[in-house]
Length: 221
Image (cartoon, rainbow, N blue to C red):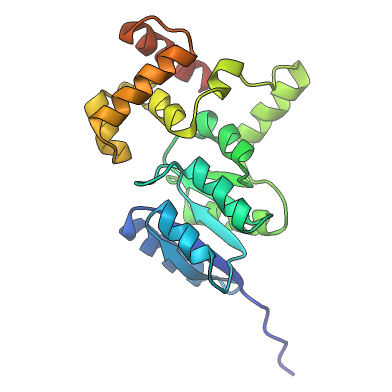
């Protein structure tokens, strides 16, 4: 006698690269216990989709989106659907971004260069109600707790999600023009973020900002 079919977990994909969404959808839809029911190319589209039924069981999303920071989108998602499981899938360094993603409400973090089986395992782990991080990141957080260094730097915490992204890209060696292109923002917006970052971190000029960002990135990694 055939068994009762298992209900598939409903997955939503949020990423501004259509080809990447297509690849993830193909990978996920090959699994017997999950299926992609919705896709969105930016944060506003994702939030609009969540206002209709059926709701996904889990959202896979990047933190760098064209219209809004992914961190802001995660918080807005939870305002619409409290407790919604969100797994961040991003090219950004886990060592720099994972803790901030978790503070925004994500339940896990996977870097895009990981193989497909890691992504699938992460989805299943988050669907169980657990938090998923790489073994290296998990060990790092445990070490922070054990050594009493788990509290992040207060000044860094004062940055908005968009300012945080800009600081990270400055520390990675990108110019304002490159940052504007990577984040799909105007150069004027990026320069405003740079000014606000300097004010919040008590940095005197652009050179001081670059030194700070570069040192911070090296420490985080």
